[in-house]
Length: 504
Image 1: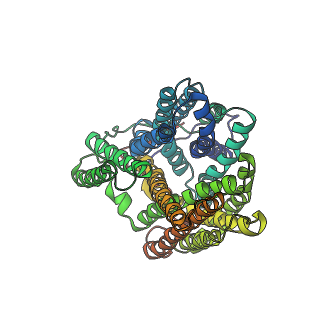
Image 2: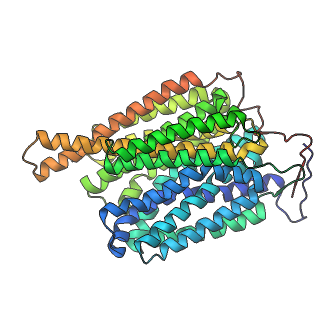
């Protein structure tokens, strides 16, 4: 690849410029990740204000997840086709505009439409942010540090959202949970304009695989919808199984098409590489498991222990601290020396132990002795899993497919979250029903104990998720020195010689 970098005399030094790019990308990632939790906290207040029913309430969340999940691979590929800087800025502006519309919503329909629009632009923004990071940091040591920060943001964003959402809802207004994105996006757009490199392609422009895009977008839509419907209507719903079956058929059709497509949306070699495949599976399992941490621990703190939203958010801060610590230790020292084959199974095993610790909670447990230790364990576990997996998932991918490879990271998280949402909610509801049935009459004390029992059941299932992930990661990841190396392989393979690029 031939390239030329031009800079004005007062431009930041190349090294400093890269870290300012990381700051910009980190802001975008934080905005996308925390959006789900801050909106969840705002839902009761939004429902009271706009007057929609409990049955309709799920669509405020589902509209976002459907658009986001189904369009992720398309969003990632767009960044490969029209340029990462341009796509990144479009995603930021679109996400901010949709957030402003949602914050100003005067009807339920307007709010749902805004959430769907948020999801669509989030599907553009999230994979593009990771692709910018992948192609910006090519020096192994710097790449490890950058992915440590990015992975920490991805893992901690949900907990930060709980704290921020509690503050905004309690002290300001539920609408500020959406308006806040506008201010974050303004700063990120300025950073993108100034610091993110613009790559001008001088070779042939890649073509979009339209049939592949339609097939995979339909598959992801059906998959997310199927799990969302199972959460609300149960696993015996014809819609749930019908959509999940349709998703399976469309995935098979997509794979068969990719084998013969002249310009495939997702070259199967990206997924079939053993290390990258293991990384995507690990991210999916972690995404499913993290749902149990945030949602059910939040319910326990607020409903059982009567914490305020702000107190609940503050309760998660030690977890965030441990996650950041583990992410930095892992990516800077441990992953280069031990590799993901050690770090990811270790994180999964620690997360499983943390979930088992949570099963001992009662209606009178204390924060310091019973809640703080497992949260710190889980934070360190996530900090061990996410950065190592994210770094491995895009390692060695050809630059022209960095966007779609990055999109697979977000797709894995989204699918994992959808599975976790549907499966764990169903398990919790069944556990409550069984407990109340066997402890009649249903007094307030019995109902309170039933809720705690349902949480414990979920934690056991979550522990099994992570234990399975530990075994699978240990088997699938290559040993250090086999195949791609985290400390020696560049972030992206050079573009072909007949496809030079010019970097501004």
